[in-house]
Length: 321
Ligand code: F6P
Image (cartoon, rainbow, N blue to C red; front, top):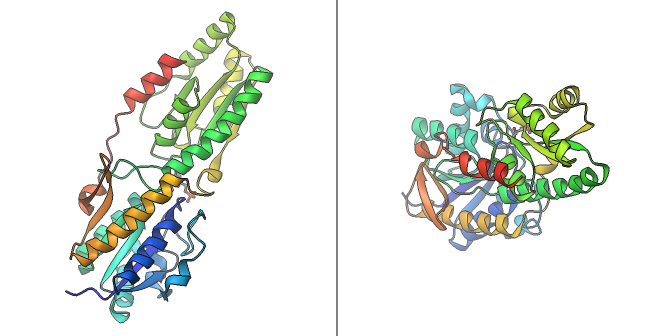
């Protein structure tokens, strides 16, 4: 099939660098004589035909912006057969030959189902601060998010050291300890609590008290949101150790902000590669970086749970404390 018109959408949680990916898809698509349509608000926009033709100028001035000019959403309607049927009508009506889906695990799971049902070629570009796409080393936005969280932790370290306090800092990651582990290591934090690993609060408190006796008086404990609640952990630490403890929840500030050079470069390269995949007749795959090379991974493989070896980083955090 000759590809003449493609559509691009962003779905799920936004990630810094999505705009750079959109810009790359649009301009590289036009360079290859394609028409590129933008779908607004992810799958919802496909269901409700919120879609428009983009041109070179539509993506001007966005390369340095976080978020996504196409907007994004988590769309429950697309989980239903009726919703996907309506989305397919939009695809047919607008003569769309292929979709480029910029998002994370949930987005690709939806794309996989849609492809199986309607055989509309779908190419995924991994963009998520959670870095949770199987077969891919790093997702667009994850580098920016960890640097944002790290800046905050560096600031907290100043006050933690000066006031000799314990801080519990909650970072994003419902099912993934990626942000927590990376910033704990890079920020020289004393403890990290992640969903992938069992955690014993009492023994940590024991270590804090022992450290305190030896003269170690400030601690930063990083907790991934899926592994516990910072306020609650801080309260329990004070209860057990009688030491003053503060909680900080970094929340959505980690998802916004200017993408780093790495997030942008990755987004630009993957955007181009995704268009090339459609032109070559590929369907149902994800493009991504693996061992420093851009590769394609079958959608059905990419949506499997990413097995991460957390032990190495986790142990290093503990050893270097
Ligand atoms: O996009 C991934 C993520 O930021 C997770 O780390 C987090 O658990 C979740 O999204 C939060 O989603 P929402 O913004 O819908 O509350």
